Image 1 (spheres, rainbow over the protein chains, first blue to last red):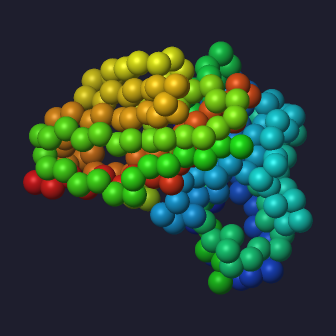
Image 2 (image 1 turned 30 degrees about the vertical axis):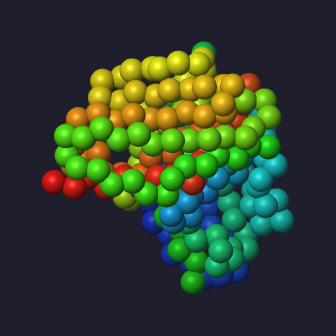
Length: 114
Length: 109
């Protein structure tokens, strides 16, 4: 089966600009996560979706970050305006129905904010 | 909330056995997962424990002790390609995952 797809793979922007990331999950995977991974650290959960509903967004900086999964399939994560400290890899991961443990990660989007 | 602790670095030689420990503090803990991440790559799933005891998958094994809030990943017959970062991740009943800071494993020839 096809894996989790993400685009773009790399993005360089100036601070205060906006940026959007896209994730296409494995077909049938209902649970979708966005993580932020700063160099040398573990992934940090930003938001968790179950189908098109938000399960947990407690660590999402809502003044600048937003995410949606309108039809319960593809998801987008947006940052507006970006700050220098947003430079990181943004990872999308999904879990299949009936599974409790195995997350499948996409290749990530490496964001550099100058 | 949850927090997990791991050693930052571990070094071993090819063919050896290495153990990476993970201690956790969490509310609503459900299970402990392990992921491998090569530089520039995405995390890939290695193992999962929801019950106490040892889970074996090829050269990799994972252990969990709920009473001690402790787990470990055991890598046997180390190969150069095992050089990577290894993350433990605690999960809750709501499938919410918190990752540890990661352990960087260097395998020497």
